[in-house]
Amino acid sequence: KSKQAPRPELPELLPGVKNIIAVASGKGGVGKSTVCTNLAVALALKGYKVGLLDADIFGPSVPKMLGVEDSSPALAKKDGRDLMVPIENYGIKMLSIGFFVNKNDAVVWRGAMASNALKQMIADADWGDLDYFLIDFPPGTSDIHLTLVQTVPITGAVIVSTPQEVALADARKGISMFTGDKVNVPILGLVENMSWFTPAELPENRYYLFGKEGCKRLAEEQGYNLLGQIPIVQSIREGGDDGQPVALNQDSITGVAFSQLADNLV
Ligand code: ADP
Image (cartoon, rainbow, N blue to C red; front, side):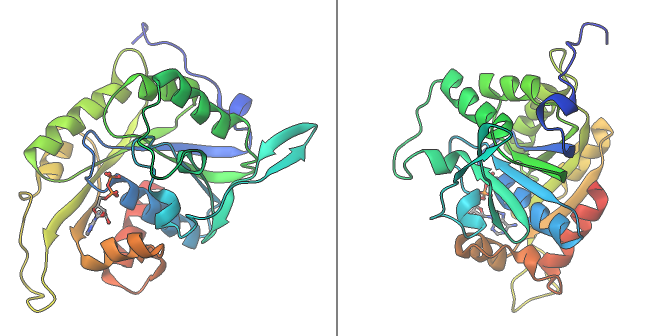
């Protein structure tokens, strides 16, 4: 694979960061941010130092999901530079593109502006020492994605999809963006979200609303790990809306699912 461009070295950009993980999806609305946030919480609960960059310029939802929607990052001097101080909650350091745009404005940034804002949140912020730095990518594939992948020394990518065929088709495109000839980012695995629904009153029943095991088949077909299957559960949605990710509740079924997901990643 000699035609692949060299990727930036980790120490230059984020010297204290051990692993930079891109969390991406082909399609929007498949639960990428939900998975990213809960994965971050699960990793933090296991004692890892975790950072999260919400790079989803089209719908930055991590501040709400982490319960810090009304925060705004401060600037602090460090070694003569003004650095953004990530907001911290549940043991996760976080910056979001959402802190820099008006919530009610549609984000119609040109690619270059968005890419610059993202670069600043990476290079001009005090992330310190981290074991895992998760980047919640925007959905799809675009110039912004390519810039991010070419600027940031990403360790590997996690691809989130529902089992539905249209989502899987986009997931394939997402995968090829990371593994294509312009970049060379390893795929760490796939996460199947919204795998099935189990009503509280019929706990034995599984309804495969978006099709059965589509993501599992895609993983097998392309030789990637299936990191986990997350069912549709009302508390997952509520936890996101309330700023209390379900992964915080380690005894719940959903908490266990995200904990296993984290175990499969590390
Ligand atoms: P994306 O980042 O892919 O656009 P989100 O994480 O914002 O998707 O999720 C889209 C919606 O679906 C949100 O309202 C979220 O709360 C909900 N959601 C995501 N995953 C689940 C799940 N496993 N069970 C129930 N609701 C979910």
